[in-house]
Length: 81
Image (cartoon, rainbow, N blue to C red; front, side, top):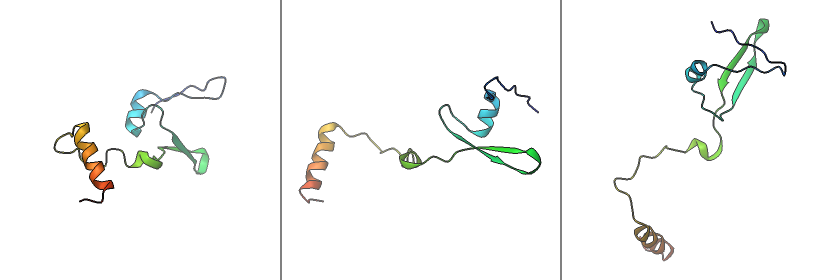
């Protein structure tokens, strides 16, 4: 069990090993839920918005140059497959 100290402002700092165990990265939010008998549970808050999609697609087989991307975009605007 890990003991944490409450600051004068009523704050606690979670140790690095606890953050790693929970999978929480710097800047990420956590949710605290009140349970019976004075118990609190803590979990990483689920990402929202575009963060959910970050990294969900595999990388392309090869990177395109800017001129290649521009040609693809131009053909799409022209209605060409």
